[in-house]
Length: 79
Image (cartoon, rainbow, N blue to C red; front, side, top):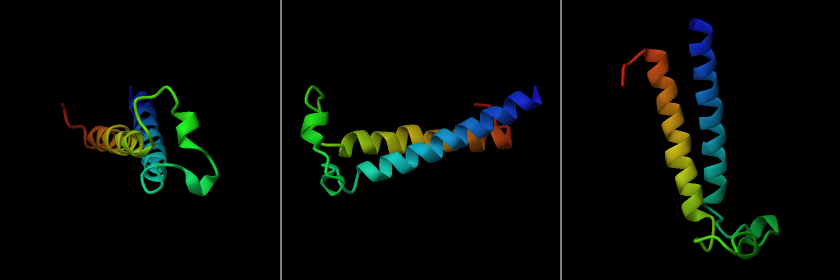
């Protein structure tokens, strides 16, 4: 059981750090103008006009919650 928990912790931190980076990149420049991309074309059928809300969701919900789950697994808290 120990290798499975170790793998779980590694995956939580890997996903969490990736989501923090991706979410952070979507928040300061939500229209992606600095990358010569048009958010209006990419989000044509989406409920958002830019990437601020999806970036915020990615940063907080996916990123921070995966980091918290990894810390919880390391400390062996039962939630």
